Image 1: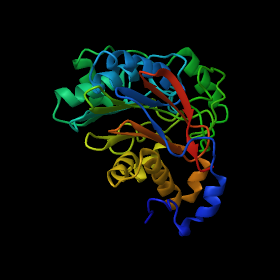
Image 2: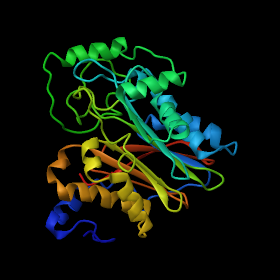
Image 3: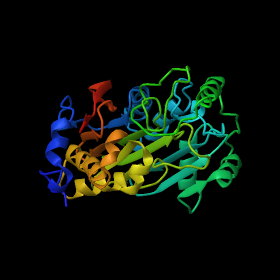
Image 4: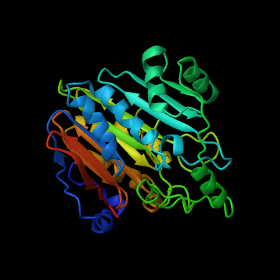
Amino acid sequence: MLNRRGLIGASMAGSALLGARAASADEAGTRLSKPCVISTWDFGVPANQAAWAVLSKGGRALDAVEAGARIPEQDLKNHSVGRAGYPDRDGHVSLDASIMDEHGNCGAVAALEHIAHPISVARAVMEKTPHVLLVGAGALQFAQEQGFPREDLLTPESRAAWEAWRKDAKYQPKANSEVGDYGKTSGQLGTPGGKGNHDTIGMLALDAQGDLSGACTTSGMAWKLRGRVGDSPIVGAGLYVDNEVGAATSTGVGEEVIRNVGSFLVVELMRQGRSPQEACKEAVARILKKKPAARDIQVGFLAINKQGEVGAWAIQKGFTYALCDAASQDRLLPGASFY
């Protein structure tokens, strides 16, 4: 079992792992003032600014993360979230999202087609049904019943990238993309989990009342098998909020996060006394210990506790996260990593 200081057990060849770690980020983490919001990747900056418009007026964290998540969902330059997301291998754009509030209420949708804002549908699931997760045709039916417009989400740019990919149709994971492919339309996306093929924005907010909420939304891996669902809409995997302790979200190859119930793990480690940074680091170490081959793909965790302390850790360098409070609304930091 991993302890607080010896985060990698001897059975994992920990010394080699630690020696290969990127050293650019502060292992002590960061503290923000209340209210605040954090999110994954460079495009988290404008998302945070939309959330800040809510938080700075004394608004609820839940409203803030929904407002923030809607920004990348509608960004036509963003091919890993929302309406401009790359399709599956058959050309269908399907979206996943989850949302969770300070009371432990949560809602999610998965494999949702034709609806541009899955995060808002997820909130509707939370607030207007007795369920947590709706999927596929049922999620679409519910969304339309709630007044969400049906749209064709396959943009000309995404179609061009998909058609370029189909020439070789390679399907083998590597690492990093939310940043690498942002705004590009060349179709040079690569393989699932690869440089140009990730997914997800995860957002966590702490409001002026001291309450936490979180949101996670994605178009999933490009060129995935139709019906594939990653960690983003799975409460406990892609997102988890415990208002007594803290909140966490994840990004990267969702299969590895699901196998380790990653965001729940991060929050539970914070409950045991780890800082957000220590908890994220230990959760990544858990993934690598169970599956050393995961060093070739990317998974990152981002977390915040009730005191506003923030931490992040990833398998590989390249993961970035955005921070926002009264002092600064456009701060971007590199995530620490093992490789």
